[in-house]
Amino acid sequence: MTDERHRGSIATASEATEPGAPHHRTVIENPLSGERIVIRTGASETGGELLAWELLLAPGGRVPSSHAHPEQEERFTILAGRMRFRVGGRRTIAEVGRTVVVPPGTVHSFANAGPEPTHVLVETRPALDMQALLETAAAMAREQQAAARPFPRLLDLMLFMRDFEREVRAPYLPRALVRLVTRTLSGLARLRGLDARYRRLRVPGRDAVHR
Image (tube, rainbow, N blue to C red; front, side, top):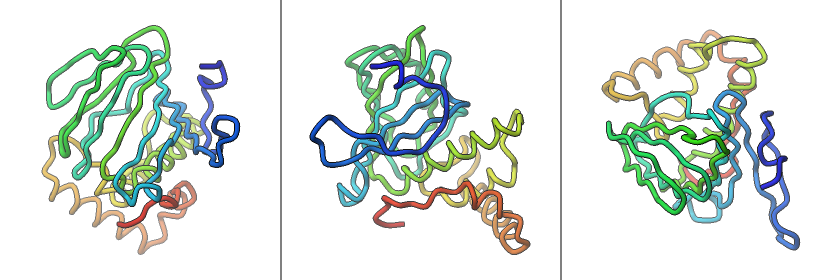
């Protein structure tokens, strides 16, 4: 990997594949988590069955919080470095060649466990609108960093959780309760026109084949 692959800024852009390849890859960078994501295979290429993406996680990088994917399985295959996982309350360190599987609905988190960037292949099944979630989360992180706020805006977070309730949920709380709260608050925000800032950050599900 080149140094360019580990730059710390955040962007959503197109990056050429290997010479002669006909497609471009979407690149997503998150300054708060230290994640750099390269989309390899999108939902539209697999009939919605799979989103395959490479994750490069900087030293000290970690997913912002524990979470679960209600309907999706995630598979993490370590290509370089070491990753610390917590899956369903069990902790493990994964090294090169190991695959960690997170079943649907399982609370999990992960972090770089070494001094070098970690390179991971992630497969998300089904794809749903996970790519838009990753892009929107990065846009929100950039806005949060620019405003020098330690936490995301609560209203933006509620709108985010409502938009992506099939893709992600908060851990441990009853799903029905979380959906009730997020749907109620996001509905009131939209009714009163308080969602304009979030809508500017929200990335459309360009690659989603169904909702």
